[in-house]
Amino acid sequence: MRFIIIATLLVVFAMWFYLPDKEQIDAVAQYTRVIVHKDREQLKIVAVINDSKAPLKEIPVYLQNALIASEDRHFYIHPGIDIMGIARAIKNGQGGGSTISQQLAKNMLLSSKRSYWRKAKEAVLALKLEWYYDKDEILEMYLNQISFGRGIYGIEKAAMKYFNKHARNLNLYEAALLIGSIPQPERFNIVKNKKLAQKRAHLVLKIMVKLGYITEAEQKQAKRRGIKKGRKRWSNVGYRYLLDWGKVRSQLSNYFSDKNTDITIITTLAPNMQIYAELAVQRWLSRAASLNVGEGALLAMTPNGAIRAMVGGKDYSLSQYNRSVQAERQPGSGFKAFVYLAALMQGFSINDKINDVPININGWKPKNIDRRYLGQLTLIDAIKRSRNVATVRLMERIGRQRVVKLAQTLGIRTTKKWRNEPGLALGTGEVRLVDMVSAYAVFANGGYKISPYIILGIRDKKGNILYWKDDFESEKVVEDRYISDINKMLASVVSASGTGRNAAFGRHRVAGKTGTSKNYRDAWFIGYTAHFVTGVWVGNDDPREFMNGVTGGTVPAKIFRNFMANVHQGLESKPLH
Image (cartoon, rainbow, N blue to C red; front, side):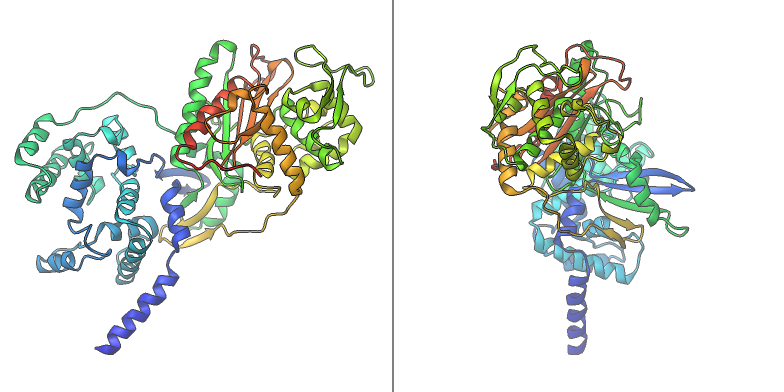
């Protein structure tokens, strides 16, 4: 007997270190997962998990109680494994006995294949979950991960799909319908089998009465009230742009085989950030339609390159073209940051002077947007006010190729297509939004070059990890003193007298740069805080179409502010490097 106990403890100890650690569990719980099926050469999205996330505080208490009553009545007592529940299941000759923690472990990190080995891993993982997280965190993760049938995962998405309302607005009967479907979601969902779903809901309500969560009067009232559907609401589709990105498709092709046609991608997309991004783009494009603003894109990442939100256009159903990673457009004054950084690296200081007076370079005479010239300006004033002539003069002084080489070093990948002309200082070379955001991330992270990524991990249908992104040493490409100065300069752009003042929000330190190409074809704002780097582009797919006076400091800066103000809620204000 003693040998069996010791052997069991050793197996549990070994499994504890073999199974996913907290970092991997955090990633699976926090980020969006996309289940992809390969049919010949076609990649199809089977389901998306965690793309609409509801915080526990926004989920009705009676819905939480319905879950605990029907699935795990000892949830707040047991350590992850419910011995009493297992004993009761064996006594009644039934299967089950799995706690919420065990179900979460299975759904998040294991395959659905039944075996004693999988059940053992499920139990150990449940113990790990209880070790790493408190009960409310586990409950929130569970409700945002669980299947509700028809490829729908998470309580928020289920509420939207079945009842056209947010989870926080579900009534008691609707909550009972959804919770009642959990044991067999494809069989018990309200769309496929209404009578069976109602029978299950009545059972959930009955158990809630028995355990004292609701009264018999509340049970009867819930049945009388029934379903109260809301109006059809918007839902996010950012993960579709993800799958269409060629770089992602080429990566995924290595992980399919004849025996493995289904994989789960753990992405870096953050559900709520993706929703805020799409809402911000849609809101301001709608408002700016009269100014001939036809399209827009937004890309947000952490300073180390993890893409957290991706909007490739205003409506995926109308156009699958991903403007955040595919379109090459002129960045206008957004490129000036590279000119001024190159000058700093050549020995200029932010208070050195440059002359903002007319210049003639082989017959080309650049003009400032306001047609005015301000004479001697400090470098920080010149970038704050986005003076074209002063910037051209500065680049000609330090050398065009030096600026181009710096842009390449920071992550701009389209430089080979650029012509060697003085207009480069004003952003005449075409760039991609993803590259601009990656380059500005170097300013936000203290001078380290990054490679943007959106795939954190890949699992097969058995739950085996096929790929996991390891930490890596980034290359330091800009010294601290230059980073400090360029951050001061770009922060001045967002000050009350800067061209990017519309991008400022709250108490967070913001830096960035506006960009407007010739004849208002393109308008940009690329900006950052210590937490996130975000780029916004608006314009029209046909570059021959002009917007009506839209600059980077108007619509793009307002989209940036709208999005960033939302995603920074609750985050600590941190200084820039």
